[in-house]
Length: 96
Image 1: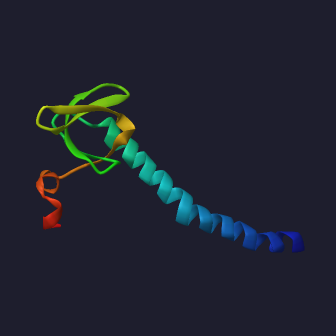
Image 2 (image 1 turned 90 degrees about the vertical axis):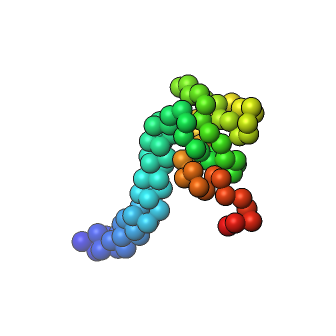
């Protein structure tokens, strides 16, 4: 019984670590994967590098993003960080 009592704080710390760090990170990762899987042509997106653009073509593992009129880049689907609101993508840095 004394061995069990001495392990209790260790178990509590491990549970707290899981609740505060592992579980939220896992949830964010699943949500990001879900968003990347649901991308469709015409979506305004922001790449993880901070570049805004419009999706022009999607394949299984990559997408084509138009970052300026007539300028399209091919990036990995995982490079899409978020779907941007249209007014966010159009606003310049001086308006932030």
